[in-house]
Amino acid sequence: MTTPVRAEVPRSRIAVASFIGTAIEFYDFYIYGTAAALVFGKVFFPTFSSTAGVLASLGTFAVGFIARPVGAVLFGHWGDRLGRKSMLIVSLLVMGLSTVAVGAVPDYAAIGIWSPVLLTVLRFVQGVGLGGEWGGAVLMSTEYAPPGQRGLYSAFPQLGPAIGFVLGNTLFLVLGAVLPAAEFQAWGWRLPFLFSAVLLVVGFYIRIRIAETPVFQAALDKAEQARVPLFELVRKQPRVLLLSTLSFVLAHALFYTVTTFCLSLATSSLGIPRTTVLVSLLVAAAVMGVATLVFAMKSDKWGRRRLSAAAAVSVVVWAFPLFALMQTKNPLLLTVGFIGGLLCFAMLYGPMGAFLPELFRVRYRYSGASIAYSVSGIVGGGVVPLISTDLHASTGSSVPVSLLLIVLGVVSLLCILGLPETRDHDFADGLGEDQVPAAS
Image 1: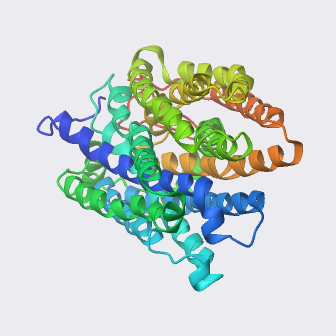
Image 2: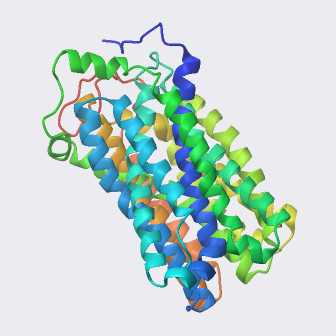
C-alpha cells in the first residue's frame, strides 16, 4: 500500500506552509534565548550577581522546554483527532501572541517581582505553542510526500531553526550596532519580540490556505482516529517512544550548547565582543541550514538510522575541539568551532523530520512525534544549558561541559541503534505493538 498524495497541491505550497510556521516559531523561541543570555539577567533580575542573573534568566528559558510536552500532549491529542491543519494554526497563534507580549513586559524597576513572574508565564505559553508546532509541521510535509521522498519533504520544516535563528540574531546584531548599550538594554531588545507580530500575520495567511494532509484525511474518512491517542501510544509503542525520545536529547543539547551557553560563555567569561560572537553564530547557522537540507535529502538514500548514528559519533569527536577553538578568542577559529558543532547537529536534525513520524502509527503519529521531540527538549535544551553554566561557574573549565556532551552522544548512539531503519516503510499505517510500519 502506498501513501496517497494530492497531486493538485503544489510542492511549493506544502514547502512554504510547513516551513513558514517553524521559521516563525523558532524565531520566537530563539530570540528569547539570545535575550536571556545578553540582557535578561540585568533587566529582570538586577538584584542578583552576574552569574546568578544569567542562571536565573536561563532558568526562565528552560521553562519553555518544560512546557513543550504540555503542548505536545494537547496539540497532539486534537491533531490526531481533528486534523493537522487546525492545530498548526492554533499553535502559531499561541506562540506568536505570547512572543509579542514578552516584548511588552515591564522591567523589574517598574513592577518588581511581577516582572520576572510575567516573563516566566509567557515563556511557558511560548513552550506550549512550540510543543504543538514541530510535530504538526513535519506531519504536514511528510504526509504529503510521495514514496521515497519523505526525507526531502521533511527538510522544509527542518529549515525553520536555521532561518529563525539567523533572522532573530541578525536583528539583535543590527540593534546592538546602532544603539548605545544603555538604550539596547532599556528598550532595544524588545523590538525583535514586537516584530514577531508581522511574522505572525504572514504565517497565519499562508497556513490558512493549505488543505488537510491526504494520509490523515484517509484515516478521517475511515473513522480511524484513536479515542485517546496518548493512551494508545503509551500502550502500543512504549519502547519506540522511549528510545526515540532519548535518541534526540543530543540534538537539543548540542544546539543550545552552541547557540545559548557558548554565547553567554564567550561574551561574559572569555570577554569576546558580542558582535564578534553573533556574527560567528550567524555564519555557522547559515551553514547549518544548508547542511540540514542536504542531510534530510540524503537520508532518503543513506537511511535515517545510519545518519543519526554518525551524528552521535561526530558529537563525541567534536566535544573538546569546540571549546578549545573558542578559547583561542580568534574570530575565525571561533566560527570554525561553531560550524563544526552545528554541522553535527544538522546531521542528526535533518533526518529526524522524517525519522520520528515514520516510527509511529497515523492514529497517534502527531502525539508520538511531538512528545518524543518535546520531552527530549526538556533535558537537551532546558536542563543542559543550566548544568553547563553551573559546571563552568563552579570549575572555571569547559572540560566538564565537553564530558557532558560525550555522555549524551554515547546515550544517543545506543538508543538510535535500538531503533529500526524506517525509510522504506509504508507510511499509511501497518503497525503492531512496539513496531514500526511494515515494509511496502
